[in-house]
Length: 622
Image 1 (cartoon, rainbow, N blue to C red):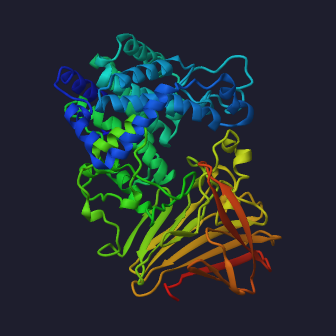
Image 2 (cartoon, rainbow, N blue to C red; image 1 turned 90 degrees about the vertical axis):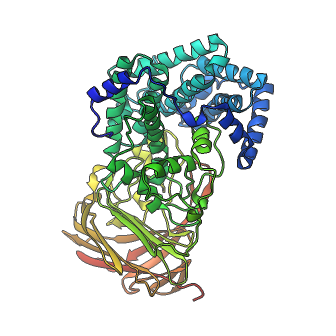
Image 3 (tube, rainbow, N blue to C red; image 1 turned 180 degrees about the vertical axis):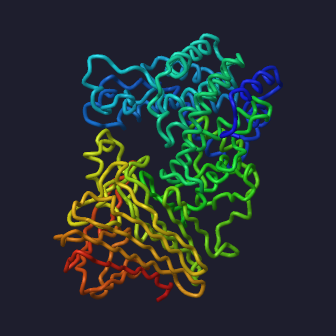
């Protein structure tokens, strides 16, 4: 319904239901249900720690981050110093809001009022890293100016506003009226006036990544809670609806997003939160989630699950993910064919976030879904999908020895959301280990989002991916650096996927470069992957190097034969000289991981070359 809804329909239904007996977020509306949740054994640890955090916040009230911390992003590129203190300051809203709903102690009321007052005192709800996002020269041309840029709405401001509006809706009648009035005035000033009173597009309205989904869904939810005038609400929500359509255009027809499953979870979850509130506000007459493409999008993560918590992590993403159980169960209500993720992919630590924690606890079933127990018994031998729009292929195969092997590869273009220069890159996963791996997400600093620095990092540059370096040239950054999907074919025994990578490189003498993946997966023997690169030049290049990023240290068995964990790599020893370079990559979360760049240098280069590498999965015990 999201793609077909008209303004006339929206306005008409909102007016028809303005005096209706609708309850917003009904699952969390009754004190009896909150008492139930409070007493559920599996949430006991969460409530205990939340109480401890509340006592700490009451005994040692947090001070707002100083101005010098606010400036750090502009001066040094450091985001985390300010954000850590800011998140601690805002945590009181979530901690005391949750406790006040479940346990009516006077100290929780006092704590919530103080938390809201502190939030209202903040200079801005926007993070320093997002200040002035609309400036064309961003992140330059901002921090060296005499005047601060105009206010915007970023992810954190939008989420804070949504949580605040919902908490006011639930417990506002029990709070001091001055606190409630001030909070609503700050939402009006920081969210509504910035977004609805100014026709200037927000930077994120032009995008198709997680930003428009999170920001506009939160703004729409705030409007549903606070705007009583149905005609005014219709106009506000119409802008919201059109931005969500823009967001959905970033998914291909098979439901894939180039941001991958982790940012899928972030962006899509907020769309669902908003859609359910709109459904409740309209008495069930407007159901945005009842749409074919949204059903496809909901299925996307299940193809990205590998094994033992690992996921396909192209672009800025960690290689492990935990999914919001409440979100997934709500999506299952719209898509009966959708499966809940196995236990190791479920969010087992409840976040201290009003929006996420409430949906996780109130939308999750109290019953354990026995059908989702993770075991190889009874599962499909092959689960795979080719996402032609975004040029992804993912295939998971149950091996004869009972292990799961998975192969994933990607094309696309080198200006995707959270882009890495990684056209032709691939992952080979065996039983919980990314043998051929993606380095994943880097540390988010100002510099990390500046192309001149970003693509020199091992995380985002093509030298940190399993793609060729062509006559010394890496892949370029920009929408013009793209791949073409030449062919894709699935048979009973194999998957064939071929990309033209010629336009990914700036090499002036490169005439053509193609990469073909043959994923051979017969039922009676272990799977193997054969990669064939064909390169043609206008004149003989000086060098040609194949790079393979390994999550396990490669060990040479003999010339042309290298062991990489449970995989053996085979190539012509007369054509290639192999060497290994160990690299340490620090993730956004501060975790150091070691990877190995397996570099195969062509011994004798020519104007026309065919390069073939075979990766055999060794049967367990062999």
